Length: 351
Image (cartoon, one colour):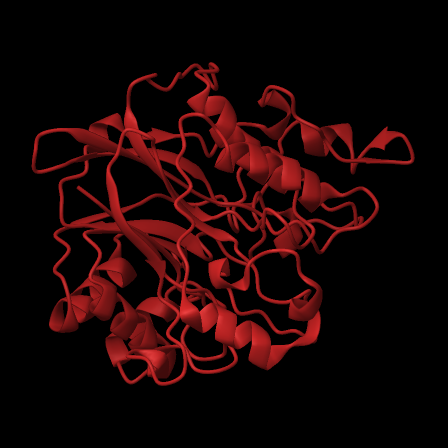
């Protein structure tokens, strides 16, 4: 099982499908090469543009099949990214900008989520919480500025919780058991002001999963107390470093139904030492990092991508595909995060 923020979002609808069809794109080739080496049975993609016919997703699956596994089962839903809200959601006094969409984006479907699977997906039982309003999440902490709701009550009345989406996807395994993929890609807790709009939203998007695992009734649905699951995706929060809520991600990692096996790599440690910058003052173990960010603009590399199994699953291996210089596959990641995706594929093996 794996998650991979492939960073394949494009600037307009249809452009990703075009690039996939043309071939010869170094970024796409690096992503395909990584997936072909790791060969996950189930793969969650973040930052992959959505189209209604799954044209781009189908083209990617075809290219992966040439060098790696075949994925007969594809799944995606329209994300909140780029979905027009009709309201000024960022308080800049203008309508129709990318920050006024339910999730930041200049067009509907920008940088969505998708699943590639060797095993059948029970599409009739998928739960999509993407339409849940932020204010309706139990215990939601909404943005305020100078003691007032930000940016307006009209905005709060339509603002969805999910930056991209929150999905519960049942997959039928070969032993006839069901494994629930709990998939999301949360908003980065930065790029805002004193109102902490993105920071609070990121916190509550992560809290969603803790509440769901607790059996809290959300949007009229409740998660089964004995279900097997894996939480997968880019949660944009490190448990020790950066600006995300340490409480929210910490509570999820320590949830009694979750096992955090701490996937690691040698390449992450090597990159932290070589790149320096904010990496020098971080509190976390650099071997757990999953993203190679530009040190001139960020606090350094962090752990933000997660594969978190339920405690009933038997985990036999785990890792982050981040080869160190000289290791197999280093040519797919390079030295500074600019080749392929700046995120790394995170995987676990289960019996």
